[in-house]
Length: 94
Image (tube, rainbow, N blue to C red; front, top):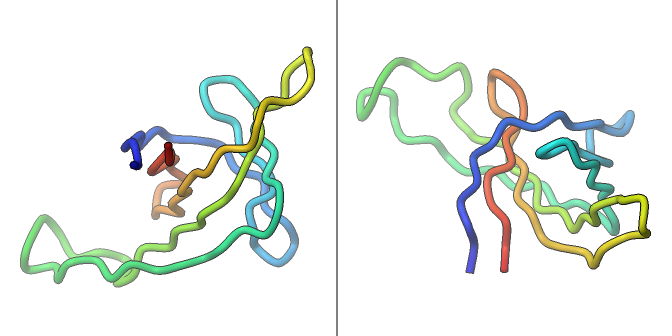
């Protein structure tokens, strides 16, 4: 079951645009395995606020481990969202 986070994060991406690591709450998380990109259609602009810059929302499902001085923790599944203002940690999967 996912937990909604919606926190702003800093993301490092590879030359081909895939996330390779991110910083959340001052901890570095390293992406392991192959990130999966998917897109979600945003609601039409007339259903809400203002006209969006994009009609689709770009999301990446990644497995990441938190790096620490005492070794690495187990991998965990996250959804990262590339928004117009930067990156968000959208979901953490339990």
